[in-house]
Amino acid sequence: MRTKQIQNIKDIESFKNQLLVWAQQFDDVVWLDSNNYHQKYANYDAVLAVEAFTCIQTDYKNAFEDLKEYQTVTKDWIFGYLTYDLKNDIEDLSSENFDGLEFPDLYFFQPKKLFLIKGNRIEIQYLSCVDDEFEEDLLSIKKSNYEPCFSGCNNIKIKLRIHKDEYFEKVETMLNHIHRGDIYEANFCQEFYAESTQINPLDTYLKLNSISKPPFASFIKMFDKYVLCASPERYLKKENNTVLSQPIKGTAKRSVSLEEDNQLKADLLGDEKERSENIMIVDLVRNDLSKTAIKGSVKVEELCRIYTFDQVHQMISTVTSKVDTATHPVDIIKSTFPMGSMTGAPKISAMQIIENLEETKRGVYSGAIGYFSPEGNFDFNVVIRSILYNETTQYTSYSVGGAITAKSNPLKEYEECLVKAKAMREVLES
Image 1: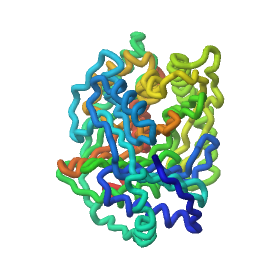
Image 2 (image 1 turned 180 degrees about the horizontal axis):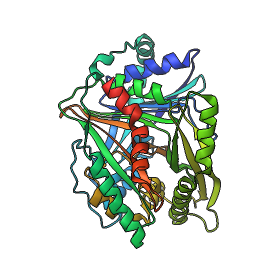
Image 3 (image 1 turned 30 degrees about the vertical axis):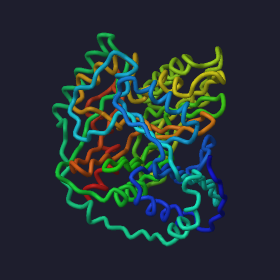
């Protein structure tokens, strides 16, 4: 049982910062923030879940069935992440590439303390075992002060897992697969990393978030492991019997010149290669959603719409479906995972080729962060534009990728990766 209280806060932005600072005392933290990006599908502006009452942490073997059982038995809010490598639970696949981060493949926890923010209204839900701490916590939150200390992020030496010439060779190999008809499209990713490095996770997240202000930002702390995520992309949401996916394919840089910025936006909208990428993934998403959808209910609500963010313009489509009330929420995720925007089409062939060409196990990158509600609703982002950090091994990593199609130019693909990596590099090397 949860005790619920409503608070109205005048200066909500200051309170959000105080809340996140206060949260750092706990071993289990999930913070989700829309950065006030006005989107019609959002339930909350921000959410904080802290202090595990129960949790599940496992490798990929039987992971979705374990999660299904945990979610069914708990019947409460649970927060956490799904790594890309859960593909190995769904298909006959493996992940043998280098893993410098060593995150569990799946992790969720039931928080003792939960804060749901919408406008200036905060709904606070505490499990009954800690509801006597509410007043003390609220005082402590309001006394929490944020003092940035970015010096811990300075002078980090970023290394490339795949160097430029090798990247070109790998893209050419992928193009050969496309020309042979093995795949139509694949998302090829590369890692940038730093070893023997200490960062301040909260400072790094706040700085990354301030640069991008994305609608699906998140901060995860799981003991010594951190995800600092500035994602613009929603993976999947379920609200009652409606399921919604919003794949991103197509990226253009921003310009300080309004005229040039509008031209870049128009060029992206009219770019035949970018549109074909997006439409291929929309077809894949439609197919994935149809596995659990009520017959005839899959619809494309938006096709190749341009959304503008602080760092980039993105081409986003919105696909919806209706599901039967008897369909388990975890089955909906399992039938669509990993998201098509991070794999390619056909999905299994693309994932096999990706595994052979990439040098790094993706882990949390290109997985998903989010929550299940007690009613079985859920909302998950796509983990991109993110810094991952293992505090114990002092390993810091971020990865970027792009869709390779028959019309791809290796140099342009490489340059697009650098555009996507700009914010993370800026934060770590500043």
